Image (tube, rainbow over all chains, first blue to last red; front, side, top):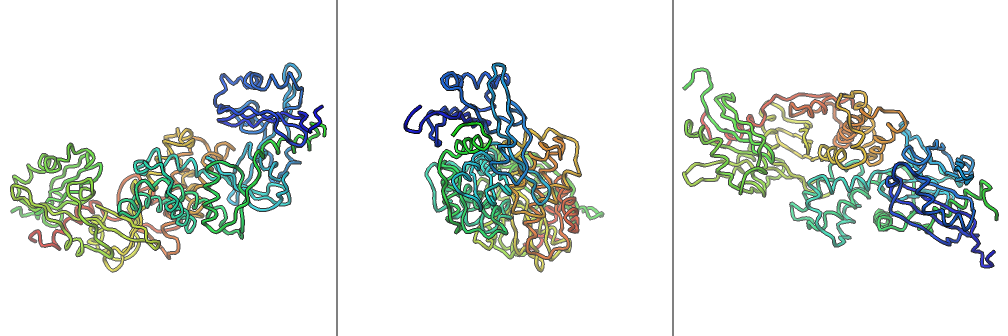
Length: 307
Length: 307
């Protein structure tokens, strides 16, 4: 037993489509060791998820026979085991109740956290796998109500209410940006690598002011340079701002929102923070490593660990 | 002189980025001969536009030394000669006034119809080159006021007022559809080739109801099949409907519109007609060959031809 509170208690794994992150977690949530690979479920050969898992996490388990809790796309149809989505509202308690225990041949039990699904007003479904665990981590920091955004290739806007997820919506903004850059006439203009903050802000304002006009305003990424009203090297940041501004305008439409919490510390998260500021919306940063905090909160709620 | 009114009077050329169409036009607008090539200004080698033109239209000119009028992207920066845009409002009269005469070495004069530019409420510019001539043709059929749509890779929505173009907006919908199909996860689902009219209608209704939510609703093209609420083979038509419905919703936002005129007879134009019907908006078809009708109207207005 370490006297400094760093006794290992749990192994948490965040296993996504293109990444694998495993954490040896100590008393009080300290991250004692971490493995972060840019190889996710897409890169597991012949569906041998157990082999992949044992290769990377096996040495820890030999040393510390701890409970293992896993979140992310690993519970999707293309993952290790497919688990049914939990319906909203859902918080750490519902996620703990719906844990799926998977026993391996040698008796090791792995606990899978399932994803969440939501129906919007039109009856169309939305889904997440992995984000619910980060949100559980955010809830564990004391956040209980309000709107939060999780920037990413597919960003999520999440409404929290009394400590649970009340609703959420996915936006394909990041993937749309990449597709426009790689597969349209706009891409040819995007040679710039220098940041263009003014062009970004201009795009944000245009998108935020009229989210419904996106298919029209995209054309301005071509006409503004054509008419000498934007430098070609600024086009990429104008387009990025236009898309993010459109997303923010759509996500907060009809809501009385003063501030939004952002999960994530990436360059993209910083971009969302800037865009929210330009749109006149306050930003609250959340602490890093919310996935591991979620692993601990859910494991504790499920009685998987001592202390 | 032919007694049946088919005496050649004008050579009209519609020269776009990826197509070249030349027409030998008779008294009263009859198309006596036509050349239609899927090779536009992109395919002219070493900028030899005159050579390309003479190869295809030279034989007509030898037989009939008629005036030649040309419209389309051929007057853009990458075309034969770049002409300044005409500002709105503009109709056949302004287009006739702004014709650019280009004299070749042998004395042949070619008259270029220039494009139009518009500034939207935010000061962002829009441009067209070629469509103004089709619109002049539509005006020549008696249309004077109202909204018309010109479906295409970059569709145009045009507001007519007292026989002139009052305003217009370009939507990149067609190119966005192709980019989503070719460069996102949605493309993998789009294996279907059978038409899926119900999925198309469902997409139209979703897009039309909330044009601002496009970046979110795109994700439904993934989640609906995932949850068994849409067949994978229906995904392409759902997405097509979603984009066109979004465009229609944005184009008519804030306007009191009962019906819209459609220019064009393509499959895409039929799709727009169906989508407008699903959105509860009346559709007025325009006659075919409006570009040549525009060539004649503008040439007549400019005094280029007899009769």
